[in-house]
Length: 429
Image (cartoon, rainbow, N blue to C red; front, side):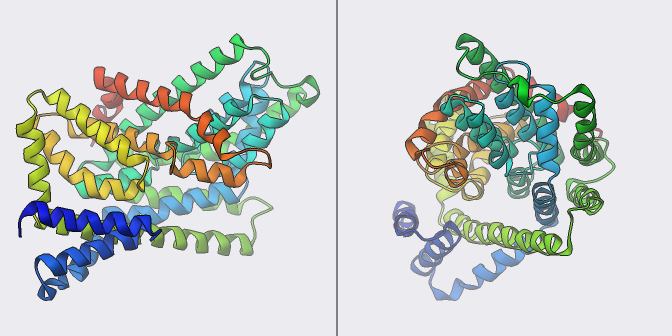
């Protein structure tokens, strides 16, 4: 069967299933199975089990569950709330401080998705412009794509054979750069319009002694970050081992708190299993689809089109970035990694680009995808926690400036790769 016909069959069924509302895990798996039956026949259905077994035996993917557990513990135990209160009180005297606090807490607590529940009501109560409040929560919450422990980096590294430790370090540097860009924008915008993001009311400011007491709320998250990243950076642990250390540390901190109960622990473990299983099903379905796509000659076709159809390697890079940007507005990020990363990485390697640098570029694009209308994950999450009166149109409009800032960050690390790779290149291992 001609390659072109095979690809039309594969992507035709994939698009059909997605339009029907089928979950991405089953849409990719089902379209891959149909493509396999049409292209090679039922005698090759054993490839489904073989592909699933390959993923289940991946040592790298073992890190998923501990990192997800760590995020659940930090969110449910109240550690995140204490960190937010401490940073908020110490940064509350200037315009835009609440939005800046949101970005800082999101950067520190990259594994935690619940910051919007805390920050958004506080900003709206403080009479912040609703678009700034929504945009800061949405963009700040998506920093977890770049800042370790990033589940996306783990999956990317597993399917491209790129060092996850170097990706983590590069993501940490790039996430810090992006957070700094957000903060500069918020501060400038707030001072240009005094009513845009007013400072903390005097009545809401605590005495100095109380502010000092709140500083204990930053101890747990800082220790966990230092332990996890320090172990990886120093070469003492692999990212998979560091995941276990981070999960254990977060559980110890949570268990020392008076509000930590057996019921909370059971809920955390159950939710960890649910999220891990959801991610693994997406990996199973998407990786099987990719296997059929590659077996039908799709990977070679795409590589040839990019490598022979365009002369300048930076033009090829720009085309890849545009493709990822478009896909990110409509597809799940994990599926994008599994579908595109192996193909594009082989192209980038042929063009003599740094694979770690490209991995960071790839994931900056996925971070943009998290807040890109119409189907960005963070948009729907924020709508779910927003008070009445906040419309979907408000949320869509709020992210436009932050998407522009993300594109600016993408340009900066393309123009000066060292911004993304300096920390990764310093790693012992």
